[in-house]
Amino acid sequence: MPTKRKKLSTHEERRRFGQSRRDEVSRVSQGDWTPKRRDFGVVDWLRKAQRGRLSKLLPIKFARMAASPFGFFRGAVPVMAADLSKLPNTGIHAQICGDAHVRNLGAYAGPDGGLIFDINDFDEAIRGPWEWDVKRMAASLVLAGREANNTEKECKEAVLAFARSYREAMREFCQMPVLELARYQIFRHLNISPVLSVLRKAERSTPKHNLDRLTVRHDGKYRFREQKPLQFHLPRRTAAEIVAGLRDYVETLLPERQHWFAQYHVEDVAFRVVGTGSVGVRDYIVLMFGRTSNDPLFIQIKEEDASAYAPYCPQSRVLMNQGQRTALGQRAMQVQSDIFLGWTAIAGRDFLVRQLRDYKAGIENEDLEGNGLVQYGRVCGELLSKGHARSGDSCAISGYLGNSDKFDKAMVDFGVAYADQSTKDFDEFTRAIRVGKVPAAPAASPAAKQNHRRTKT
Image (cartoon, rainbow, N blue to C red; front, side, top):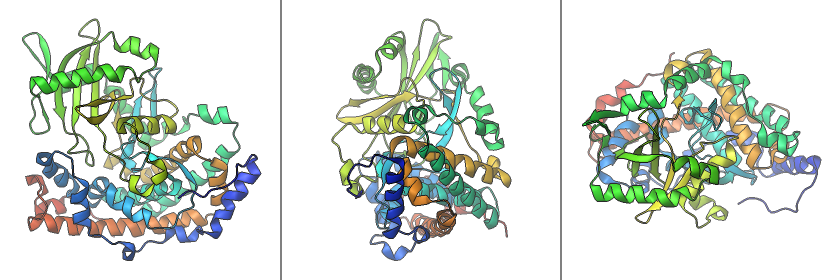
């Protein structure tokens, strides 16, 4: 629970309050992790978390999780949410994305058409302790670094660079005028090698390029490619319900954006399987056209469940559309968001609505080799710090972090310890697949475990 306190008016009062939280949770202790706090079995917990999802698609999700320890980590947010809830926290809350890991940052087109690099996944967004995001990102840097065949030393250096970047950026944000922080966009990292690689890929992900990749021309009309079980068409009645859901969605947009959206018409609707953690939710894609076939618009309508952190953040249990929760979390953490970001409800289920593949691209293993991992860690730290500063109390967080590297080193300890824990959980998970306790698609055979790259010695 966040700590109740009187309203603090000055930078110094808020900074001192954050500093006082060290008496409850020391910075060094933030590096502690032990599985002894767990009161649940990983496999059973994960199976429980899939309730309400499309069971026929879960073997695909479990196959993707079984590809590597990092793949498992990406699909196991409910496990880490439960683990984090049992650790002491500062009680200083901000908007958290909830699934902060290296693959959940990427490029996308801003309202002005320029490319932006920022956090871009908010399915688990909620208001909660800021350090939960930091700890998840720290563990992800170790797991992704190992998967990219980096040494343990390189992985630790990346986490240290990440935590230092987060802390130093938060100190800077604490001193900014409110409106300057609200408008603050980070550009200097756009020339950093790993990010530059992503931006180059994003430049190629044009609407026309996506039209060629995702659709085929039949009888003079464009139709989504049939690629079962990953992409396929729906019964007409279901497709009609999805299109009808766009009417309520439009009301969540700003008036001028409603005008722009109204100039497009629906051409085709399909179901699409995306990601790792999201596999099993209802995810629809809609092809629309403006005045000509040279003006395609791809819309994604993605089902949103309650955040995995909701049971541990009772103050955030606001009765709202879960797509709205996701969209508002995104708007809170990003300076610029998708112009068509909104939400709707279809057949009693909640959905986030946004553009699909609008100049979007993400990081790959080859971008995270060697010094690329350290460089990327610095970027992750500054961007995550910006998101928390925009939505929380930057001075209180900065006061807690201080000027020393105690917290930075603690995140290295936590990142390594929790990455090791996730690897053990991965081994338990793949054993459950081998004995038939967890259903997985053929790609998740026991040999799948051998497909991920181990750490260099």
